[in-house]
Image (tube, helix red, strand yellow):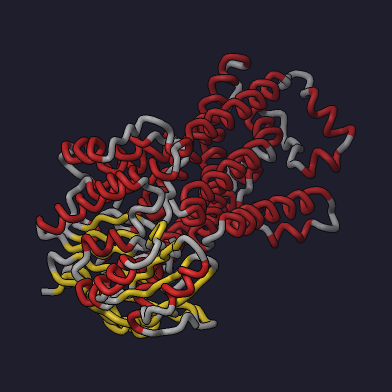
Length: 295
Length: 266
């Protein structure tokens, strides 16, 4: 059953910016990854879901309610992490969280404490003096503290260190297990790989594809940069019939897709000194998969 | 229709500004009331005779020797117009446009609180500030006069005068607040929201200053606050007051409707 539905959503900002005829739906208990390069229209879509913008064409609903007309009702069971954390200037983190709880008329605050502990956040300092990571943690606590049914997370782990990123992933997985519905925009492959059921990619305001994460992973091409002892060895290594994308001095970049064993057996016969896998952004992987250019 | 948590925070946020404005008003009231001399005419009247144009420009020309006319002339032609007006300009921007401009409005709307409630609550915060300032001035004036010149002040007329100035400031507040709700950029919200009342005030000063510019008074809403008329008990003064009050209601209602319907890029 779909909890969140977007149908034919259009908002034209001119010059090709905006979102155009966007349609997808998210099922109950699903974590839905929302990906795309900067300026693709992710935040614009999220603003429509939050009821900040009125669709020019089409509609979006959450829990069967119209995101523009019933925005306040929808917010009752919705948690939101904005892409940019801007709070009120003069509050401490604790003040802000208790303000939000009262403002929302949330009853229990045991969950707030649990979340603060989980992210090792001491929220007693002034918000404007907090680091980006700390602010992000405050935003996370504010989004989860009223135990919402639906979560809209706009790059939720930006500014967090790897440990906290993995704590956040655990939190999302727990919420998923509890049947919560989550829309998450992200740049982190690990985050999406570990949490999402399905992924949608948006480019220039248009939906390029929606697919299961497994499909994406199976199709993923991985790059390995192999360092050999000398240039001669590198040249010979490159001539072994592997898919080589680049040779520079004694380094060879090999592209592997479901044939890692072949690479390993070839590597066994050469004087290898190092092997690294450069980080690939999710967009890059996705773009490879769908073969689209960047335009 | 009102969110008390937000209201409380708004009032707390205005407190420092209110104290500063109250302090300034206290200073002017104390100094000017002490200059009143029922027997001889005040020292200020000497100024008025020495430089009539300048004093007239800032509304300082007493109609009679009564204490209430004295206060009307020297406090309600400039001090009580300018300071609450500045308060409205700053307050209106802070309550809506700044939140939209910076993005902190996100948190106010990512909650089960209707936009109408948010904007109505912020309007109440501003209204409270204006009301408290005018109420403070009223009490300050009465107490000050009763101490220095017991029995001299026509308290009924003085209260009516303050009711008039309250209506004027609600109207000005309405302009500032409406602009704060229309514009997403703080700089436009302040530019237009503060610009219109400031222009109105300058036009009134021009109209006061010279006979040939007298007709300028029809171009500014400040004319509707006819302090001389109110003191003299003229019907026109009361109608002006009511017109300003009705205008304030229209302005604030439009602000609520506009903010509730507009697209927010937050």
